[in-house]
Image: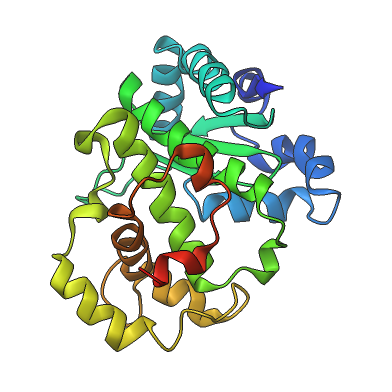
Amino acid sequence: MGVISTNEWMRKDFNRPIQMMERLESTFNDTLDAEMIYHHLLKHGMYSPNQKTKLTWEDLQENDVWEKTQSLFTAYKKLWGGPDVPIYIFPLMSTGIWNKKVEMKSGLAFKDKLFLFYGKGIVEKEIEALLIHEYHHVCRLHHLKKDQKEFTLLDTMIMEGLAERTVGKYLGTKYLANWTKLYQEDKLREYWRKHLKEKHTIKRTDPLHDVLLLGTKGYPYMLGYCSGYYLVKNFEKLSVKRSFIIQSEEFLSK
């Protein structure tokens, strides 16, 4: 499988993304229709058709991102002994004129597939950082014998932390996500006691899960992500392959 030629899909249907998503209905076991799939992907960085995202798409073609991603995927799949999954690449959503927080990339991982969203001008190391992070999720989901609906907030936090720790292992701190550097450790310890200690067992289906993970509604920004990275960052002697199978609760016992 590996990288799917979504480039060819967009040649035909760039301005009709919902029709394009009909090709994906079978990968969701027909539980979601094309419109539902598109709206789900939109929340995670998928483009809306406009002049700006059309320019991004043209830039990605000139930059050979499909070939570069396939080459990286082949290497990491072999290195980690990971599963062979389809990878769907699309342009990243465009940011509004007042939005100063310019992100170059986003992604969405499932146990059996991967979506990568690239911004205009993305460099190869950023592509690699995103692939490492998202493919780490795929590998962990593949190894953990746990339905995603049963995931707790702690499970999600640890998954994000481990994926980003792995980016640091291969590419160094320069390519870590900005959210890894938001807070000092003493502040994160305080946030854990105040906001997460009593709530880390809530299920993914609980509306509070995403609120705490992303730090919305008055909670510290990216609270769950930052705390997850803090919990795993200094964990001793953790190989990448062990990071696919280690239980989330082990990070609370240190």
